[in-house]
Amino acid sequence: MMIRRFVSLFLCLLLCTFITLGKDKKDKEKSAAPPMVMLWPDAGTPTLKLTFEGFTQLASYNGQLSLESHVLIENLSGNLIPQASFTVYMLDKDRVRVGNGTLNVSDLEAGQQAKISFHVFSVGIPASLSLVAKNNAAGIPTSTKTVPLKVVSVPPGANLRVDGHDVGTTPAVVNLMVGSHTLEFSKEGFNSGSTPVDIKPDEAPGGSISFELGGLSHDVLELRDGKIVQGDAISMSMTSILFRINGKDQSYERNQIKKIILVQRETVAQTPVVEPAPAQPAQGKP
Image (cartoon, rainbow, N blue to C red; front, side, top):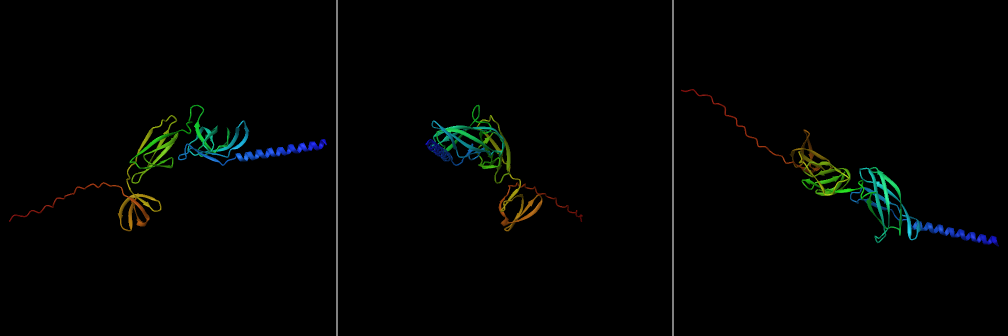
């Protein structure tokens, strides 16, 4: 009789254990969510890309959930990020904050990725996230700080590239991270140019930079295959153009050419040379 009771009790305990394990597993599965991708400081010119895997519930106590997510952090800039620290705010579907935690990364080379574990306490599973950069002392770390800079060109309307990325036409305001950058300018009818810019950690907003494009010194042919040729147009007809490149003449068919840019040339009026009339031989007197 005692053996039967013991077996029955053992089976009940075993069944309860299976039910509890199944429930815990089901809860963890329910807490999983699709990855969340965050771009810092913005999607236009991101410095960091943070991919949060689905949050998994580890435990719960007194209405608080212990959540974990593995975060893949990628340095999209061309510079080393020595240290970056973020406060991660957890938001529900109504954009109500339900928790927050701190995320730190250090010594991230340009283009390098790092995967770290992120633990946080929350009153619910987040539907979205919000990032605020900080450091241990006073706010934004210099490694992720951006400074707005107004860029103008003479003439205006030049195509502007920052570190190899198109950002529009001048005048423009660009947000530059602390460090060294290269600004490139191009405009039809003018020579392209570039200039380096250094943003210091204590750089204040409100600065500006001006760049003057030089005029073209040669005529330009833009071919339909994308090739650009600089030289001097010698002659043109209905079917071809004769172009002098580095002292050598080359003929291009009209259908090869997409666009011709002719520089303005100054013509200098030559003073006519008047040669004196040859002296007439003296005629003898009769």
